[in-house]
Image 1 (tube, rainbow, N blue to C red):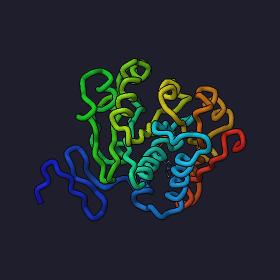
Image 2 (image 1 turned 90 degrees about the horizontal axis):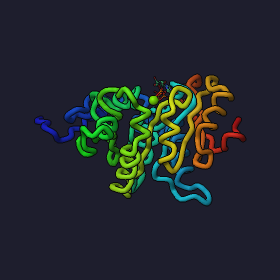
Image 3 (image 1 turned 60 degrees about the horizontal axis):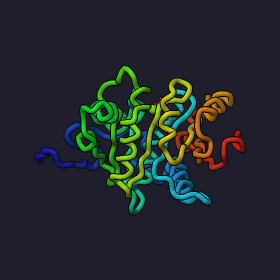
Length: 251
Ligand SMILES: Nc1ncnc2c1ncn2[C@@H]1O[C@H](COP(=O)(O)OP(=O)(O)OP(=O)(O)O)[C@@H](O)[C@H]1O
Ligand SMILES: [Mg+2]
């Protein structure tokens, strides 16, 4: 079959498009195993975000954590899929970890221009969007190459204009923003000012209470709407557990 630029989704879930190839990563449980325990926990997180007492449904949601490797990108990706699988919701998964992009490994596209280039003025939003085989889920990658000054870029007026433009241009859309770890960079703190809600990720038997508290001290607490305990050490079926307790109850 001739592919040209049109999407061709194969039976095994892989996607062929300019720039997008291969079977999506197995860790995208919401896609490959939507009825697993893990996927159920992600749906719980979605439900919590959609039904918070006394709060409107947040449309710009940032996923962050204290330390590297706690599972931010995985949770952000699975949550984005969960929301996109809802009835009417479109999702733009925005990668704001400009230093160490990883969504291309999960969704299988070549390193691609995105946030960095847009903020630096060398690319337009519409030229950077990556389609996925998941209906209603689009990705805005971090960028082709890590810029020398990520924090300055994220702090720039252009970045706030970008988030504003993305949220206004797509009013029916959720923005799920994947970030770098708080301990390593100031980037999440900068992005936090521009989002409506923050989901924290912690990793079972890895995140220390002091790390978590340090992370909280660097974020606007009123925006933190939940904490995910990512339990890497458990059985595959029980790898995530979503707790909607707030942080002080949980720890
Ligand atoms: N629940 C899980 N089950 C199995 N593997 C996991 C799970 N969560 C994370 N991992 C693995 O741990 C590694 C780190 O996950 P991920 O990239 O999502 O973390 P991160 O917090 O985004 O890291 P970074 O701070 O480097 O951006 C990846 O190899 C991922 O596949
Ligand atoms: Mg990551």
